[in-house]
Image 1 (tube, helix red, strand yellow):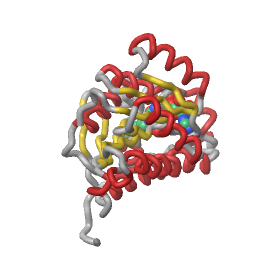
Image 2: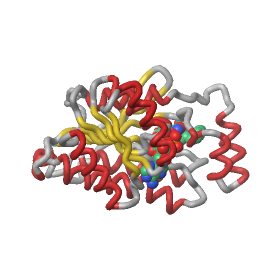
Image 3: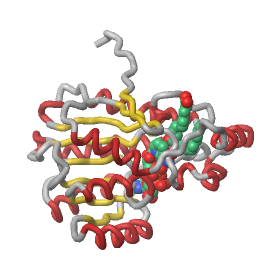
Length: 261
Ligand SMILES: NC(=O)c1ccc[n+]([C@@H]2O[C@H](COP(=O)([O-])OP(=O)(O)OC[C@H]3O[C@@H](n4cnc5c(N)ncnc54)[C@H](O)[C@@H]3O)[C@@H](O)[C@H]2O)c1
Ligand SMILES: CCCCC/C=C\C=C\[C@H](O)C/C=C\C/C=C\CCCC(=O)O
């Protein structure tokens, strides 16, 4: 679909990868609502983006674990810019200690945002249809021994995307679902200071920090992920796909489909 003139919500867009996605979409002519729980970073980012892109961007404080917040973000976006046609489910955390929170933010909330997005975007509900992109992770495709909870929720997210894409309601909604699955990206989430707080087991933490210093440990830029999100939005033939983002290349990974349905 064409990005120019589209109306987008980016969850977790105040910083990191979500901010880079918001910038790319604004550059391509979209109207963007950044929905993030962090109003300090959110206000700062929106000021910066308004300076560059004018009134095509708003900030809505939104905790994606709360139904009312998410619904209010969709309502504010629709009231300001018109029908939402693109949702980027990006907000996420990495916390192996408070694993319930990781499940709540990275999996349950992305499902919540999707269901509410369909209330606004679904053609069956008077919306215009469109597309929903999920920021999963390479940890949604391969096992990662140093962050099993994070890997579990990201695998769950990839399963959700693949399943929504073959829902019997897909034609009624007129919405496509795809996931971007990057390896490590240079953001607060992957910095040593954060990892020391969210990985409890010292042996695991030691291996994780050593692993990140090895020659083959690659750290992408947030803009590398934004490029792949743009590809998933623009190509209308893509539905239910997982696009792994590696250094200098991207690969669609389709786990095997067993004939069980
Ligand atoms: N950094 C990486 O290495 C990496 C790699 C692959 C995928 N990802 C995924 O990318 C996404 C973005 O992460 P990032 O690396 O940019 O991290 P980040 O910490 O820089 O940004 C995450 C953003 O999400 C927001 N957020 C957190 N909890 C929220 C909530 N409950 N409601 C609303 N907003 C909330 C934060 O305020 C922050 O602005 C996550 O889903 C993450 O799992 C990250
Ligand atoms: C090796 C772990 C690096 C950890 C960096 C911190 C947080 C990263 C979060 C990302 O979502 C991580 C995604 C995937 C991990 C990166 C590469 C895994 C490659 C595994 C493989 O080669 O099989």
